[in-house]
Image (tube, rainbow, N blue to C red; front, side, top):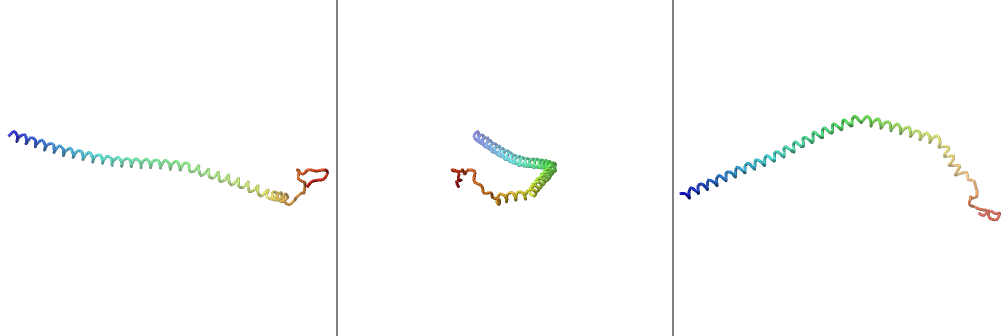
Length: 129
């Protein structure tokens, strides 16, 4: 009878261990599900924070851009005006001097004065050519 009682206790101990193992498996499964859910929540939260940060920085940039757009436009207008003035000065100088430059060029090409070259030396009273 002691043997039966020992077998019953042994069987009951095994049953208790099996139930404890099932309970532990449930706890591990719940922990895994909790971890997966926390990762998803963290990703969602990070994505939301990134979107908020991006929106704030874009708004800040648009504000900066709009406050400096007038400065850029004014600078461009000033550069364009300065360029026009310089271009007009160059055009005026061209118009004023073109006839004189053409005349000087034609004088150099057309009016040839035959002269001996400066390196030519006189030999014995006669000129060597």
